[in-house]
Image (cartoon, rainbow, N blue to C red; front, top):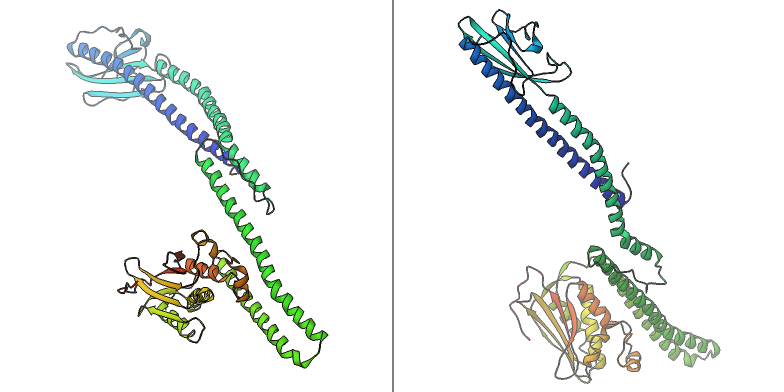
Length: 457
């Protein structure tokens, strides 16, 4: 079963890797040690066999051969299988091998049991040489008891040391991982304890300046955004309630007056006022609905729209307004979006400009070729916007001149909606410097296939 915790998985993984590495190293060590001892034993046996074969070929050998250093036994056998000479420990023994070589040569082999000491392996070298009486074979063997003893000793040590090392690595990994994950558990516990009513709480940031510290900083930044979003939501609800309460209260008062004084002469004025407040409620509800849609995070509309046509139509619909709108529109400015959103953007900017202008509003649309953007400017000759208020005007339900804006129908949502639309379409809306009055500039990215040759200012 797979361990559930990161701590257990890290410990298991580290232990498995160390166990495999130590196992491979142990096998390699045993192989190297056994190979070295085997070569030493074979060299001793081969020296004995070659020297004895030389004596036999020269006809100068005794029936009893004394093994040299490192050699356990020697036996000389002719082609008929008769033992011609042997070491004292093989005296009277038959030929060691029933096989009879047919030609001179050297054969090296390992016997599981030696003829002199059957409890150990032996490395045997068989040298066949030519003599005056025919082929003679010399067998010389060296016991591998030193190699076997060393292998057994090393195996026993490794059988104890390797598990202890693996256990030590597992214990150290468990403790170190637990120490490293302690801040993560503290972060998890703190986040689990945070509810929607105490978003002011923050997770502890370790002093280690590592990945966990960066995780804590990121988590706190996320909590900052959540807290700010909660504050904006509560403020929005309070402001919306306040905005809705005023026309509803007026509408109720008008209806109560109509009920208390059923005078037909007053009905026209009362109905006109009620209708005006109803339209105001309807507009406010539409603004709130659009803001809710803009806040959903859904993908924005992505249809090619000619912003020049949208801006021109918005300006033509205001020809009979008290404050005229002068236009300077590029012939073509195709952007990605929707006609509804872009129309609302232009309309809100013009509404705001006409609400604060003295005598004149100017709408300019140009194409910024190098920046690949359509630039929409709306200017008025009103009191302008102070530098300190250039960001505040885009906050929801914000009025720099609250009484006048409310009387003239402003809800404080127009510029907030306009900026949200521009931002959702990948652009921007800012207040920029102007010689007189206010100058609001919206930049919307052009359609990739659109050309931007006109760069009028």
